[in-house]
Length: 222
Length: 192
Image (cartoon, rainbow over all chains, first blue to last red):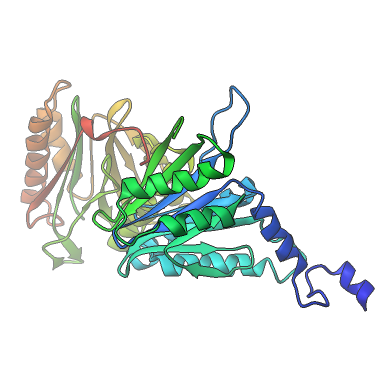
């Protein structure tokens, strides 16, 4: 029986774990540090653009999904971009069917179901976690979705390398009345504290006032 | 039924259309919108089966937005016209045609453009174009009034005059004119 288990990694391990999903989470924790922060006025996504070799253009890390919602991710970048495209298509499908922008709950549920399907069969679960930030009828929303399909709602998330320490930093610095500049300084500090110096960080923000997700182009040296 | 007009000028494009929806010999509606903005830079005037045309407009909006997000810059007017005509062409080839004739107009890096896509999926582009049952009459006015150097404001007046002339003699057109202007300055060349 135990030998059979070894050949079928998509089954539970004797300890009741899905080892492939555990490995996928492990892959995410090797990705670049990525943070989501929410107040009632805005949600901010910040992602470290990893130091690359010279002559290379920095890869996009914060993605616009639709006018009112954006996302960032950590893990295998190919897996992240696959999920981003899935979300973009779903947002446009929703507009076609309902003539209305998709709400963040419906969008994150779609992502959860998509990822969950990949935990059920003999395929590789995607090694990527996604943080969604958007504005809808319920206000500003921030959701993290993991490779298992688990979705978390909250005011602050960190994924990727050193996520626990980064989360600790933003937990200490978080106030519900944080301004956008302060929030950007906080997420930047959380990322920079990890690698002890200035990092290239890309930000995206959605404001309750405008209900638009805006992509902020990365600046060298923060 | 319907009369729609699209005119290209050096500083933008203008679309005009009547407001009548016909059900055979009956005026089904007097307040129909036949001009649609796909976004800031591109607009469509619809003629033919309303449901087919509106479906195409919504599909084009979604596809345009998706492609712009994926590649990082928006579609040119020609790309938008081709996008729509490919869908229409597939419809014709699979024996479930879209009963539409669309005027796709807008501005991009190269300036202002007007295209027509018919139900066979053929795309043509000229300085001014018209579609619908009133188009022969509208073309008469356009041929007389159009000049290469026409200003956007004059193009707007000419488009309205062409539709009004068609409304006088075409029973499929009437009940007022809508005009939509897209000036060159709308193009910014970035998705977000």
